[in-house]
Amino acid sequence: MTSATREKKRRGGWFKEEFGTPERRLAYYMVLPAIIIIVAIAFFPILYSVLLSVTDSTIIGLGSFVGAENYVEMFANPDFWEGLKNTVIFTVASVALEFIIGLGVALAINRAFRGRGLVRAAVLVPWAFPTVISAVMWRLMFQDEIGIIGETANAIGLVSEPILSDTTLLLIACILVDVWKTMPFMALLLLAGLQTIPGEVYEAARVDGANVTQRFFRITLPLLKGTILVAVLFRTLDAYRVYDLFWVLSSEQLESLSTFVFKSVRISQLLFAQGNAASVFIFVTAFLIALIFIKLFGMQTGTEE
Amino acid sequence: MASATTTKGATGRSPLNMILFYVFLVTFVLVSMFPLLWVFRMSITIKAELLESPAVTATASPVADNYGTVFGNPDFIQALVNSMIVAGTTTVICLFFGSICAYSIARLRFLFKSPIMTLILAISFFPQVAIIAPLFIQFTAVGIINTYWAMIIPDVVFALPLTIWILVAFFRELPADLEEAAKVDGATTLQAFRKVIVPLAAPGVFTTAILTFIHAWNEFLFANTFIFDAAHYPVTVVIPNFATVYTTDYGAQAAGAVVVTIPLVILVLIFQRRIVSGLTAGAVKG
Image (cartoon, rainbow over all chains, first blue to last red; front, side, top):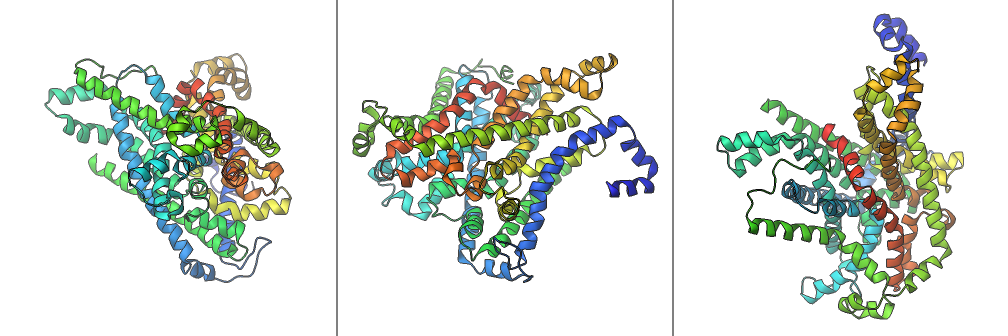
């Protein structure tokens, strides 16, 4: 609180207004515990990660300063590039599929019909599954020995080798499982957004002679933009940090950025410092992705108004 | 949300249109539910029939042997207990700090509200893997590595945004006059919160508790990183290990997966309306 008291001396009036009354102070006291927990356990460690990434530290403790050496080694490591490549393919493919199919489903079920409860259940069940458990379940189904999908795909000649031992097929499998698990949730969010668009808007457009396509591109999409931004951004950053699904479904074979960090930090003693460089890389790139998203979508809204 | 049927009724649609719509719905529901149903089917089938073909598996006579196998495994029972303890404690801590924070954001007026909301929201976008190395070192330093706290503490941090976000939405829906009335009658802000808002918000708090519990129950990365002793493993770490424990005993693997999923599925099915409105509140309004 020392900086706060200094602040108080500098700009008395404004500060007094915000922190002077007991009511206002109480508001801050009530927010503070949660904020302290978040800053101490999430933001402070990130700074520590940065420090670890420019030293030759081990899991035992801090080492001496080595500059960008860990980053140079990380960028020279083919495993890192494999992880980055798989993560990018996984993120782009799964989020694109989830958005397109999810929007289709949301549009289709945005009406009154019998059996809404059943649909809601069908949406929530995959979402509530622990990711690792759904990976275990799908793994059992992809099995070449007893798996229903593995056997069927083999029988109709879709695949010639066991799905679980080929990294390309595994990556496709991960994308499919992710779409299965989170597309319904995306549809749910988009549906909630659709339901906030008043029906009169469509009526008016119909009276003015707008056809289905025009109504979709001129009304639905622009009015849904906020919901889409939240849903797609959230899913993109979630897919970007993929760990559980790759680790379990591929039985630790398929590399992502997160599995690279995990292996370096937790399993290999020698790669600890590189793992920290990769940690910082993931954090910074995730931050940039969020910024780019908000900037792009924000600017589009700006030009339209 | 659930009862709010949409403006476009089923009127004016051709029978063919309706048939196609229901075909689509049935397909959607089947695809969503299929893995759970199929793995459940596997879990009540004996190994010999599992190995024959999917057709045989589908028609085999049901047996409970596989459940006997997993429940006879003390590590599995221990893992269920561990997950309960970790997810339960996480939920209690999150609700305590989360409801206080959410009330302040929803009801009180102060200047730095939106930066604080942004900070909280930023956590849900945060790549958890980026902090496992520093946390490992710090948890070792304070001696809580390989204990429940090594899971509970990070779980709380990453569940808090969800808790706060949903509670803010619930608190905002409550009529403001009630607290005003309480305050006119001489209650302080804290008393108004404890005696008026908390009881009224109980259904919302309960929904939030379920969602927080599911979040913590499903956590895998921190558990897999900070725990290296079978006595503290949660179910999410133990179940994937079944692939090596039971190698070709696929029925037992299926039974394990079903056991840890069924409680969640039941919770979700009972409280589906509330959960949907809780989950979508943040995305639509924010």
